[in-house]
Length: 123
Length: 207
Image (tube, rainbow over all chains, first blue to last red; front, side, top):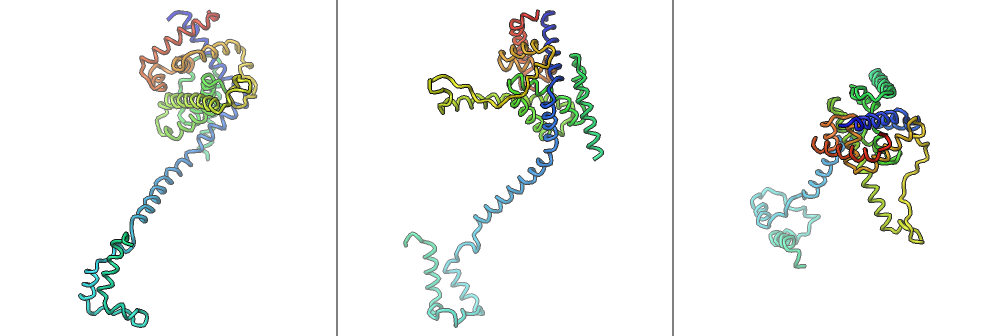
């Protein structure tokens, strides 16, 4: 490296440091304010770190709710019939409120209900 | 609260130490303060000058420095103080590149929208934020010389300019410069050598 190069480096560095030293007061104040802002933000960042998993959990819960169907799949007529027959102590439908024709042929109506839910495209 | 006051005092000491830089002693700026506040206080003016050299605009330079400060505090605040210097300059360098690219895209979009030409078909100036503050270089005793070196640096390719400003002006060592630039030590030396060659020709009057 020549003497000229060393002189160029020294002068460039000196001018840069002097220019940095002589930053006008208005800009110095704004830089100071920028520093304060940067240093005061970690709290917001910590809050964001907590909000992120909370948001993810909320989305997950919503997705589970959408996927999960209360009551599960409709019972098959065989299982309904079996339930009716296997438990003779079960109380019959309230006679005052139910259609008497309903429990004349429970197996027929359960079959009808089952086929209705199984093949909606027939409508 | 007392702790915060102590930090602030230390930060102000950092500023004073920075202000006391009358000579071009690199040793003075190589001492890394123990607290983040003091570190940023000691580096903020040089960082802003550096950003101004690359971006050529005071407001953009301030944005770049503020963003670099925030990113350093948020992402690397827990790192040892000895690692802050190359991390900070690396963040600032990337932020400057982002702003330069954004400015380029903005110019292209203005062109697409037909805003780049007036009714006579002449080129309109690209929009820039208002910059009505007094020229800081006018305050400098060597303002002309500083203007010359800044103009010469702006004529360099970006990577050469980065190598020169970080390695020579800011005084990072080769490894730190390489870390800040995201390249190898060898690349830093190559960029620096080419920068020196170009500057030698451009600043012939300094001889």
